[in-house]
Length: 91
Ligand SMILES: [Zn+2]
Image (tube, rainbow, N blue to C red; front, side, top):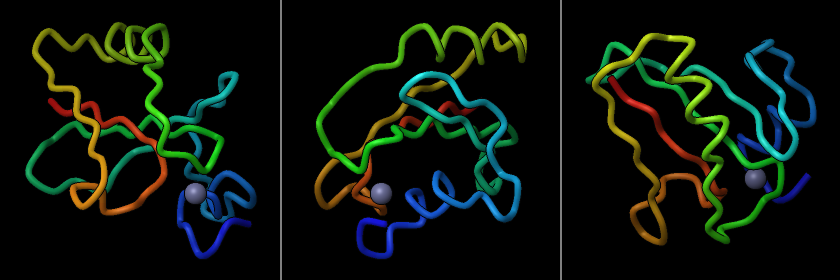
């Protein structure tokens, strides 16, 4: 495991069965709801901050959940709570 990264821990162990989708280089989990009703995270399997965009997987999640209006978010540097590439889908 790379340091104490919570995303690496989910990818390697998934003891809480959080992984909803496992596709290629990415996994999808539910985020704990904060402000939004719908909040999924698409997380790179690599512990990296190199920008990649999982376009097909984002489209799949959007389609499966019938999201007409949604927000995509990706944070870097001091904006990233966890320095491991992940995308937020919020609705
Ligand atoms: Zn990580």
